[in-house]
Image (cartoon, rainbow, N blue to C red; front, side, top):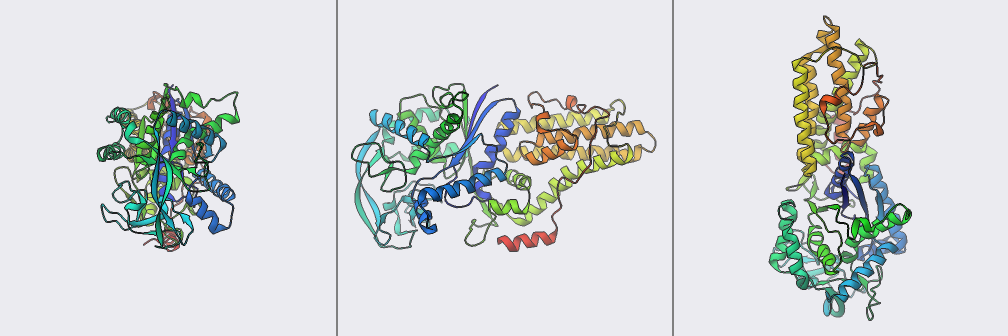
Length: 564
């Protein structure tokens, strides 16, 4: 058994998560966490809301709420969305917690003591009309490198080049739209990345053979361009006040304390049961822990460069990421999700339309791993009807109905296996091995394709063996086929559990079993599991696992959510 620490990018508190947020890091991390648990590993899977920064202040102002109450409101919304999508976090915490403040202060003190914090007077954009210094992300303009006209003051989303707000051409405030901006001098603290760079580069070299290209190439691009000191304080009210004399009126930059939030949230989790849990055994001198992060590609630089550099600069043995799984973007009908323009499907609306497994399946089958993916309602409907309803659901319902009507609602006994049966078992075992390999490697699209192929093998087998015809002349042989098929239905529940937890639970329930009755996936043998349900074991046909989505419903969804 291994200790696996899994984190997902912390969703920013501002707004309601949409399908792009789910597939960009949250859902893949859950599938991996569920799989790792089923493989018998000790897993700690944590996440939480990222709550500091200007966006919280602006959002609270718009809604007429104190910032802390605004964050309370949206933390609950995010937590509910995660619950609705069956994300199995061991703890869903908050970056604004006292625990995170304590650890942030400690890490800053270590960096400062080791000479990796520098003071610098910088020029920062002040909005005269908004009467405030603007955080980087609240300044928009044209990128001086690629010409993208919606580049933010901290980074261009188009070319991923790291920017300073003063680099932008024709900048304006995204709060008010005002271009009445002034450059004013203000004193801040910086993380001296160039000084840490040699250690960072040495550490990063150890990841070249292991990280996916989307993560490693972005990190190398940063190093190749040369690291610059990174400002870690801001002129804001909302955030952790800086614990250094002369800077008490400033707060730490959200990108400094948010990644540390993984540790702070783990401490929140541990503090609830201090007699049973230790946050240090996962984060400090925890050489037996494998740490896996899931990120959208826009977050990769901070988790492959800035956060590891922060940890290295302390001189302490903090757990650093072993594998960083980066994702590209999910678009909606070729464009961006927009709640205000009623374009796109957001988490709360999604669950009101269909159960979580519908969304989980489509998103993981189309995960934007190597490049961006586009969600279209038509493709979603076709995929659900073809794969979930037509392959998995059809097989389970067909087998159960046939057995119940011909032989009764218990597992039939049948006879010995024939070559066609052995061939089916061997084929599925090969595919199961591939499926596990893809999940281990976090190649999710390939894993889902292999899982679907496993479902298809069951349909191929029953079509080839034709128990409905054989039963007229050889009831024992038909009983053998149906016994194998019913056990296959249970096997499908086990294999699908990381991806489709609700469906897996429904299938197990048809056999009077629960999720606790599932075996571990270690050394999973199809030949053994194909006989796990003995003859005489009862089952209930019950309702179909999935509903077919009609053309009329598809048009309704397109009109409702801005689809084409």
